[in-house]
Structure formats: C-alpha cells, structure tokens
Amino acid sequence: MASSTSRDRAQALLDRFQLADGHNDLPWALRDFFQTDKNSEKSTGRSEGEDVFATAAKVDLAVRQPTLHTDLVRLREGRVGLQFWSVWVPCRLAGDAAVTTVLEQIELVHSLAERYSDDLAICSTADEAEAAFAAGRIASLLGAEGGHSINSSLGVLRALRRLGVRYMTLTHNENTPWADSATDAAVHGGLSSFGREVVREMNRIGMLVDLSHVAPSTMHDALEVSSRPVMFSHSSCRAVADHPRNVPDEVLGKLAGNGGVCMVTFVPQFVSAAYAEWDAGLREAMDAAGVAHNDLEARGVFAETWRGGGTPPRVTVADVVAHVEHAREVAGVDHIGLGGDYDGVKALPEGLEDVSTYPNLFGELVERGWSDEELGKLAGGNVLRVLRDAE
Image (cartoon, rainbow, N blue to C red):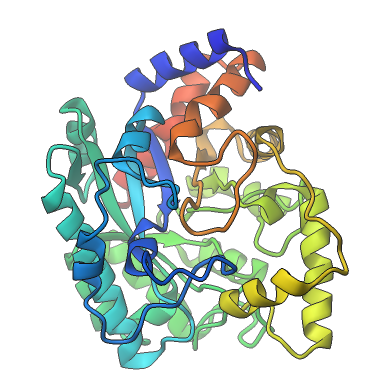
C-alpha cells in the first residue's frame, strides 16, 4: 500500500484534477437495497411493480451506508468529481419491460440529483461537468448498460439521448438481436447490419459507444464503423488477466487511432490472473451442471456452494495498477481512465473496497513515478476529451 505521503499527494492532485469514474451501479443497488441477494454480483431481487423511488428514498446517502460501496460521504473522501451512473437493465428483462426499466433507472438518478442538489449535478456535456466540479459538486452523467434496453428501436435510442444518457453499452452478458456479447455464444460475428446502424446513429446524436461487455468481434466492428471515439466504461486488459470481459491488446492498440478510452475496472476476476482462472473453473462447473455462468443471479447462488476451486484468490490494488500500466503501454497515456464498477459486484480488491479509496490507487502510481500530467489524464482528462469529441 502507498505511503501516507504519496496518498496525501494523490489527494491534493485529485483536488485539482477532476476524477471521473466510468461506471457505478448505485441506482440498481438502491432498487434492491432492502431485498439484496448477497450472493449475486448484481442483485435482481426487487419485486416487479414495486415503487423503486419510494425504496430509494429510504436510503440516506448523506451518511455512510456500510452495505453499499457508495454514498456521498465516501464519494467526497475518494475525490470523485464526475460519476457515470449506470442505468442497468438485467438481461432477463426484454422488450417493453427493458425499456420501462431503463426509464425508471434514469428517473431515479434525476431524483437523487434533486434530493442531494448540494452534492450532485446532472450534466450532459463536458463543459457542464467541468462547471459542476468547479462549483464543488459531483458531475452526474448517465450510462445505459445493455443495448437490449432500447428494444431494437432507434427511436428509443434517441429518446434516451434526449433524457441525458451519454453512453450505451452495446450488450450486457447476453447477445442482443444485433450484437455479440463477450460472455455468450457468438451469433452475429460481431455487429449485424442493424448493429452497425445503431453505432452510426449513436455517433450522430452524440452518444458514446461503450464496448465493455462485448465480444472482440463486436469491438472490431464498432471501431471500423464509428466515426467518433469509443469507450470501455469498465474493462481491464486481457493480456494481464485472461477473462473474456477484458480487452485484447489488438483492440487497445486501435484506441489511439480512434481517439477512444479504456477505463480500467476493479472487478476481481477481471484484474487478477489467478481469480480469472478460478472463475474459469466456476464456469466449467456451471456448464457441467447446465447452469448459465453469464446469469449473475444463478452464478452467485452456484458459487456459494461450489468448492471445486477452493477459496477465491486474494486481489489487491497492485493487481489494478498492473492493468493501468499495461493499458498505458499499449493504448497510450491519452487513452486510459478508470471505471470501478462499485455497487455492481460483491467484492473488490484490498485497498479499493469502496469509492473512498481512489487516493490509494493514485498514491501507488505516484510511487511508480507517474507525473502529475499523466495522472490528470488518467483521472478524468482523457474521458472529458472523449466526451467533448462525441458532442
């Protein structure tokens, strides 16, 4: 762990440079706050039709919430200055139900910003985000996780953009009717013709194409089609940890030409090679039992009783540092960022347990000789540039 001196320097640096996190699942965590399945990476326990806004209103984010990774106290401690809030829709919800749910998620984020208006500011542009930071508020932007939430409708896509959604992840853990996911059997060979149309329309309306969760073939197709910079809101490097959710070097190497950004995530099985191997064993056991590994709820239940892989390996902030430095080497320092996936996973690396811990990571990088300019780009400079280029 970084020394207190390095951590203090990191905190001072993050008081100057706006720290942007690419992906936080607090909105869904609040939906399920009173019905959380502790075994699931992303709980799906809320009863259908329940008033999600009444549920969320019972949780006071102005004080520490020990069962969450995120609250306003710890966001301030972590120096988070720009947060992309994930408006996630589980793959089990399809069609009209998916559209309804993503709209509820968007409204929930807006209601949080109204409730905590001294701390959160809804933003849609890079200029607005920077102005919010200058005013001492956390710039709050929306990212739709899972292309199934548009129900294969460009009209819904455009409506989400009008409501302030600035990126859409083309898939989640399962394929959409027009794009292949990294964690599903390939159907389209990447993007279908309609999928390519979705990417072009996202370029036109200023919505960032998020390639986290998609298959490498989909990554390559999107980079070929997109005329604007793309992003990975929460993915790490496949060369460091061989997990299908991570980004291959041949894709990272294309980001400089595209102008995009890879926001390194903290999810243990994505950052630790040993944990990725453990997770691969879990996947094999689930396949043998006829249980879908890409079903988050089923995976959590299965893993609770699975003993074939032993205790999950220890993961630390040093594992994340390895990905950040590899991404800098392959993609370049102008094409990296951070996307923790807080409140979207059950456990996180030691030293990065919640949103208050960002100075630990930056302190480690200070000790490795990163300059202030490089740290400023990683913190938020790069993603703000990408956001502005998409506008």
